[in-house]
Length: 178
Image (cartoon, rainbow, N blue to C red):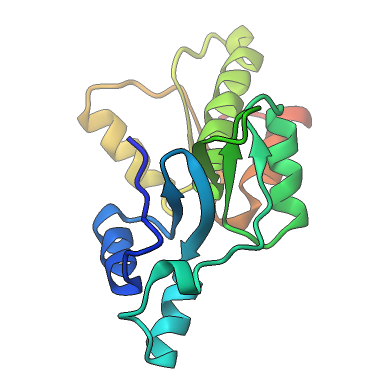
C-alpha cells in the first residue's frame, strides 16, 4: 500500500503520518496523479513558520525529480549521487504514480545484492553463511545470528556512510577472511 496525502490534508496530518509510519517524506496524490512531496524539511519549515495547520497542497515541494518505473537501478544510484533529495517518486509511462524510492530502499537492495555476490565470491572457501552488516558493533550482529541458531562462517562489517565502497573494496581486493 502506498502511504500518501491529499492536497487538502494539513501539514500536521503529514507530520503525524510520517511519524506513525517512520518515513521522512510522503507523496501528495489525487488518484494516481502526483502533485508534490511533503518531506521532514517541509514539516520543520511549517513548524518554524507557524503554518503547520495549513494544507499540504500549499506547502509541499513541487520541484520534483522523478524516476520512471522501467529505469535501471543504476539510474536511481546516479540520481542519489547527483541530487540532495532523500527520495524519488516513480512514475509509469502514463505518468501515473506507482511508488517511491528512498535512499534506505536503495541501500537495502544493494546490500542484498552485495551480500549475494560476496557469498558467491567466497564459496570456494567452503563458507555457507555470510553476514554483511552496517551496524557499528559486528559482535552484536553475530550474537543475534547465533541466538537465532545460525552458524556464521564469514562476517563483514561495513558501518556508516562508507557502506558500499568499503564492502566493494573487500569484495574486489581479495580480502583474507579469518
